[in-house]
Length: 160
Image (tube, rainbow, N blue to C red; front, side, top):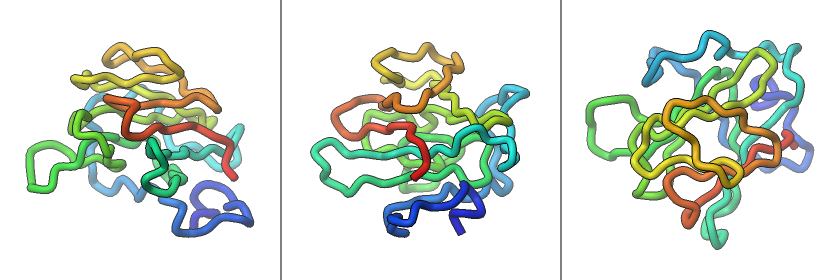
């Protein structure tokens, strides 16, 4: 149930509009994570957040992405055939994205950070291009795009 993983879902929530990132299982991160990157205790989270995934031109209904019980989430281009390397937790719609494009990281307070993994076309947060491997705080209300802003954008929002 989403409420057990990311706080209570809003009363107006439609289940189909939500995607809870599944447990990490035995998946390994694509790089060494910062020591502070942990699954936050629900009692320590300062503000419950979610990510709004919006396609340009609203070709697909807006999706709300919930972190679930995750310290990190890999974003990248999904490859249909089996290949080397990890499959992303969140597949990016643009073909310009790298297979391992960026990481979302969380700390013990539930704050969210982004790290570009050296992608070919970059990651932009709040209009600023991230330097590869730099960890940058993703603030509530800021929009991010991965490889291009002509396909989809992601916005960090208060949950609900």
